Image 1 (cartoon, rainbow, N blue to C red):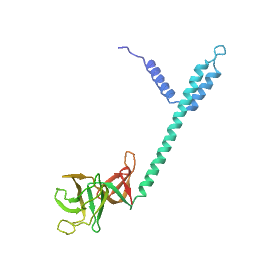
Image 2: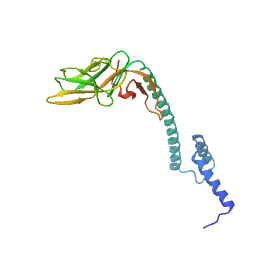
Image 3: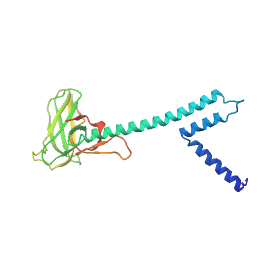
Image 4: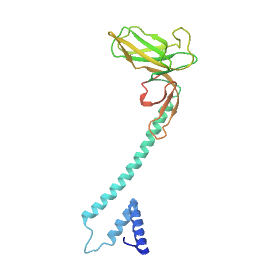
Amino acid sequence: MELRTLEQLQQQSAASTAKKEASSLGQDDFMKLMLQQLKNQDPFKPTDNTEFISQMAQLTSVSGISEMNENLTALTSSLYGGQLLDASSLIGKEVLVGSDVVALPSEGAVNGQVTLPVSTQAVDVEILAPSGEVLGKVALGPQAAGAVSFRWDGSGLDGERLPAGNYVIRAQYLNGNSVEALQTDIRSPVRSVSLPSGGGSPTVQIDGVGAVPMSQIKEIS
């Protein structure tokens, strides 16, 4: 193994430091170095035009990238602020989102919607306990294809109102001789707006549903 003297180690450290400083030169430093190079060039061997143009191109590239990064940062901040403002304006408003859970309030009803791909003779919306037991049902009868609204007043199968809380909801329709499942959309008020810790779009907090990205909101009323 080759042994290095203290002087050699110091020279190596100085060279490494100079390399790091050179790699972190800014636009002004770069321009000063180029001007100094022009002043000290050999008049009998002037700087080659191609090399000079190449150096200028490097300067323009560095400057352009720096300016682009600043513009992107400003644009991102502006868009983020706009999204937050839009999300905060939804607080207190009712929105339509896809969910298989509903929050029954102490008073009032739960409203929602299903979308039928074809006409049918029967559509049922069932209310279930977390265990899967059917506690309530809303029979919508024959319906044409398209969006179909429903309303559950909180009544159970026995006609008595169920306790306030979260319930599972399930919709199905008769398609010929078979029963097909439908996605359920729930109308519920927005309670608050939250910001993801890692960045990204704001989310809205909806009763019974939880945090939902703004992109998943289908309708605002």
